[in-house]
Image (cartoon, rainbow over the protein chains, first blue to last red):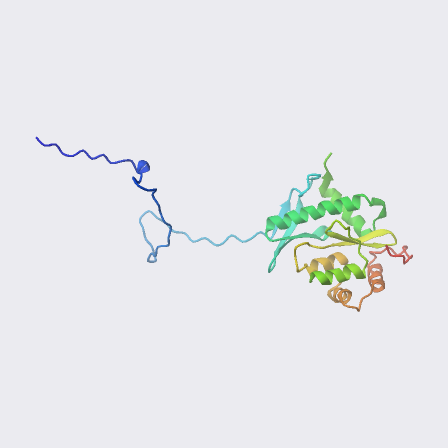
Length: 141
Length: 95
């Protein structure tokens, strides 16, 4: 009496190549439009616009704490991104929004220190800038 | 604005920068800190409009600072007219 061969189907996650590691390749496939698959819905989304402004809540300097968020404008230029704080006409530059904001934060910290040591010796414009800075930034104790 | 143009302004206005390579350049008048502007390291091109804002000049005046048509004395007069240099500060001993 012959018996039928016993075939065990391995689970998908245990399939292994006996000789070599399995490989796979990612490539583009062409599909005819419109692609209609029951149960599948394709939606087209618009690119997310890059932010034109944000609030800066920290400086790139451990010596300072931001007590009131700093409104930052972002400008995308040809080869650089400029972040600026219009109230004191300060700016940072960088290849990304992040690096530009870091640069702005460093500059604000440097400006704060420079004005702090010369508080009694500031012209009218720097007095104004110093007052604005103190509304937003304090030194850490 | 090219970096060398920025440096022309730094020299003409005798802006004070520290040797440590600070980003800020300060304009002093009669011992007072009047204005500051900034050098961005690593960039060949400096944002001229932002620097112009910080120096409190218009486009024509900025161009004059880069070439020879606006002197340090002219610049002081521009700032006095805008009350950025206090009127009572009459001693012209800059820095």
